[in-house]
Each structure stands twice: as structure tokens, then as C-alpha cells.
Image 1: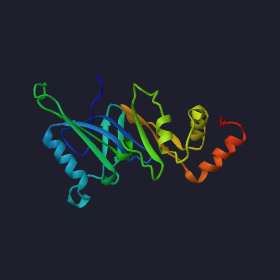
Image 2: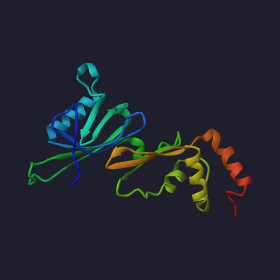
Image 3: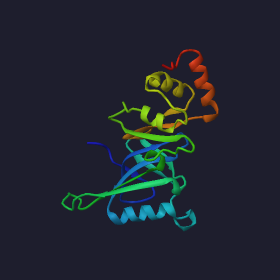
Image 4: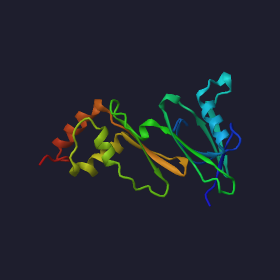
Length: 192
């Protein structure tokens, strides 16, 4: 059975999955609890610290003590679901809080976030790369271009999480044209 972790700031709210970036900013959080505890948690995320708002917290469990910073709430999106009332604990609410770019890529800034469960690390980045890249990409360039994206740190693995991982994608448009031109000149990308 998977471990359930606790949040330091809210009693009766538990998490079964989270993901942060290298600066400990929350990118994804899955929490469970009774409806009133979840409503309190959501409300406190939007309040300033001076009014008992939550701007950071610790997630704790067996061998886990993760400090999490809550970034600007305008960048957050959420999905809520409820269990049947017939569970052993009664009706529970599950809340997923995530960065908006996990659902809808930021095409203006050429950024996206791809989340995956730890059971499914073999996620396909290519459709997302094609979507956020301002220049057209041919499918036969897939392996070569993805490798270059990792080299240039336009894609990097997010592994500071529990139950979920991710890739952050940010294409550097200032370098992109030069990099692609060089790859075409070296026959690394062929135009048929």
C-alpha cells in the first residue's frame, strides 16, 4: 500500500503525490481529506501570510521531509473529486493542485510541464516539444532534436517528488535558430 504523507500546516489533509522544482516550488500536489479541511486549505493558499495564509509547508513521512514553497496562486489550477460516502472514513475529497502549464503549454514563452506517474516514466516528450517550439519540426528529427534539447537544458527532469515526476520544457528562442541552422549544416537534421 502506498504511503500517505502529512502536511505541516493543515491537520487532516494528507498527500499521496507531490512534485517540486529545484527551488522547492510546488508544481503538483495531490491531497486528500474531508471537505471542510480541503476548503480551509484552498482558502489559506489564497490568503496573505498575515491573515494565516499558507505560503510554504513541509510534507513529512517515513524518510521524507520536503519543504515546499507555494508560488503565485494565479499560476495554479485545480481539480477536485469526491469518493463515495461508503468508504471506511466516509466521504473524502481529493484535490489536485498543479501549475497551469501542465495542462496548457505557455506558447508565448515556449514552456510546458509534462507530468508522469512514477510507474510510467516512458512518457513521449515529442508532441509537447513540437507544440512549444516556434519553428516547425519534422518527425524524422525526433531523436536528434530531443537529444539536443537535453544537452542545451531546454528539457530537464524534475525528480524532487513522491509518486509523480515530470519534465520542464523551455525552448530558448534566442539560441534555437542558430542551433537548428548548425545541425542542418552538419547533416544532423536532414531536409528531404
